Image (cartoon, one colour):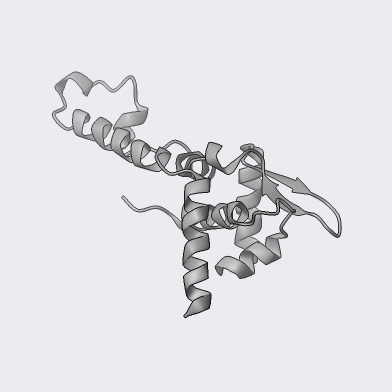
Length: 143
């Protein structure tokens, strides 16, 4: 299983928003430049994140994007599901009416994998990742 660029870039942009402690709106261009994300692609991601209630947008010369709720209340799972849809290891996870469910030895594997993946992604919130990013950025500027 591999995360797509949507999730990877979306999470990077959210970490950047969370790492900025002033709470001022950040333009999509500034976010794109800060994390090396193609601007047109980032703009699409920000629309999806806004629709999911993860970011707010402000129009105007001093406009941009901010987190819609405190960083410690937004998990990586929230972001991934906003950008990709529900996290599921297999099509079997989405099929409640699978005619083979009771006769499929692999069904439990897929359910357990989905549960583990969701558990890992929900175990990381943006506040935790922003703190890590600030520490990494500080080390980079010293070296």
